[in-house]
Length: 514
Ligand code: NDP
Image 1 (cartoon, rainbow, N blue to C red):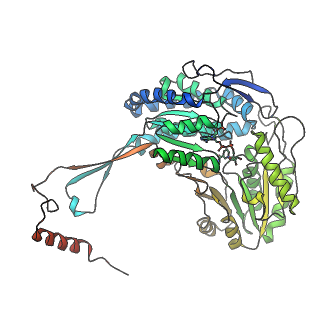
Image 2 (image 1 turned 120 degrees about the vertical axis):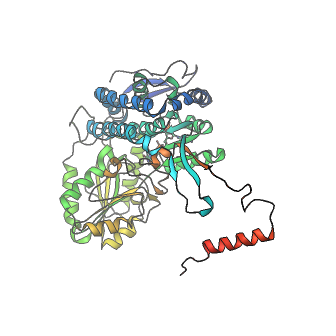
Image 3 (image 1 turned 90 degrees about the vertical axis):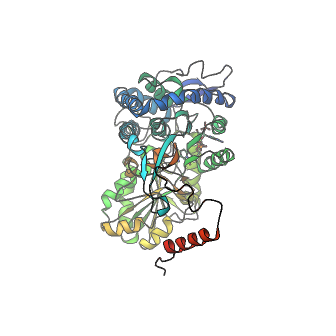
């Protein structure tokens, strides 16, 4: 890709800002240099956003959704440019860029355009309390103001820009702080929205380092963060000082449970895809597989054969490679550490097990066996192209091991008995569990997606995925009030207090008790 220059205007980028050199992780080549937004300049961006937001809110759903619909068309019209930008700054394959990133965003833009007005319309509430008879009760949603979205490097569209879409649809102004490793796709999406008619300051991109993200937390009205659990905790603490809401999508260590009656061929293909797509750099990657003893050898054989047949290397267009580069050099070191220490402690790598020699950040797709929960490869988020497979005696042991984790993002259960599969899914301690599929729930935008335990707070997708960008307001209207003074109002008298006591006992004292 030709060296691109930032789309930021001089207004966005103050003089003296430091420079970010964006590298292609598959080649090591610098593909762009862009100015970083410094922490001190974030408040200025937020002030511009704050000034622009009321008009955007007042524009209403029709106008906002019109612009987001145009963005969906723009995305597909400029698909090749978007894919080239994604591939060159992340090192991912053409298919990961097309099917996961562009596919997700095209679907999400359509989804929020269609669903935002319904999810955020006023709700009439009925109260069971006789005290409220005759009152009108309404719950309504108002955009929160300026939302800061802080994104990671693994999915610049899905995990960073994707969260801006419902925030914008709800009527907020948004400032996106992409990872400094991958700012170019976010800038391209700013160009997209401006081309589609979005007012300048309603969506701004603040390329920068961690301290720019921290400064954003200090000035916006709400933070949507995706990234590591460690940084997520810092963001939550910082937001807590200001009492602003945060939504956190953090790390995962997703288990896959394969029972003896599963379709092993399909399960093996899903394990390979779920563990290695995006070079394993997905929060919902299959990070560990538990297989019932009777089918363990056959399953491992199938997975290892399939992984041996995969092509890895610098992506060069459609179907050129199956596994791309890893985006962050630090992440390659983490993967190497997890695998080498597991092997040192007795695990075996049936495939891979090493960094790939030569240019670029590549780690060979690695199937690990004879690994156990004393190893970091099974306890910590590896976030790379590895698949540790563990033999278990039965479903009970599989569930116990699946839940033996500080994380709880998602997981899967594989069995020919659907009722048993659903029952087991309910025992997995994770925000989303698929039966006989992996990761597909992420594309069910109607379903909430969020982590339990150290995997996060709050959800994206579903009604809550847009309501979180709003303040809720409850309105009570007393339309008809025959009394000038209701019985609960002062001054108190013995007679009325006695009457009220009787009333409370009559209303609430006759319930069925165990
Ligand atoms: P981080 O969590 O550190 O970074 C995520 C985003 O937060 C980046 O934009 C980063 O900026 C920004 N940031 C960093 N420090 C702060 C701060 N104090 N306040 C506000 N924002 C901040 O992820 P890494 O990129 O360092 O990856 C580390 C680990 O996180 C990986 O090893 C992997 O396990 C996990 N991870 C999980 C992801 C997921 O989807 N759940 C995605 C990516 C990583 P900058 O990058 O510019 O420093």
